[in-house]
Image (cartoon, rainbow, N blue to C red; front, side):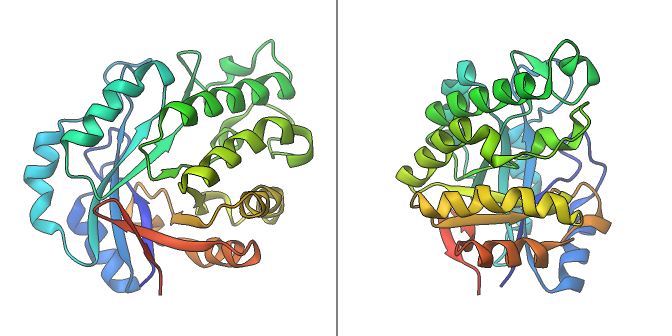
Length: 256
């Protein structure tokens, strides 16, 4: 079964979707879903991207099924790795995404992050931060949306030129591959052919370095986007000879 492994409902502060809506859409598409609510400890806006985990599991555990699993998207900050590790051990997640949303304690989507920096300076800092986080977060199952910065970068051409950033990207991919961790193909931007072609050498390099697994996720925050462009993500994985998986009780399951 195909799984959309990156879905946000109302426990995420940037989503109003109810879990019943997500389930109904997944049933129409005949796919499985993993709920991955945002948990960014000590976020620059303190009221954002945190939720009560006890309430989450108490309310949603009854929805667990072969087609629905419960996970979390952790905002990775290396100074907060121990707190996140404790959370991962204490709660019964099926799946944990590790993502970089904050660099130097600043959100990277506002234009202010890019002021006074050329693209190379901003992207170098993003990838350096990501590498530091991956070093500390050996307990996450997959690295989320490596191209997150491309969504918001206030630069003329936001796409990642792998050749330009290879020296910073390769250590990230090498470490993930050595540990057997997955990397996500986030389908949110895959309607843009240029985005697909800029991502291709990154995922191909992951495979060359020994990486095996990719997770596939729409990053949906509303029912319309659940399952969106997953076919393009699977096609990209096949081109790179990577195997799409989903997670159950923190164990990878091959998509069939």
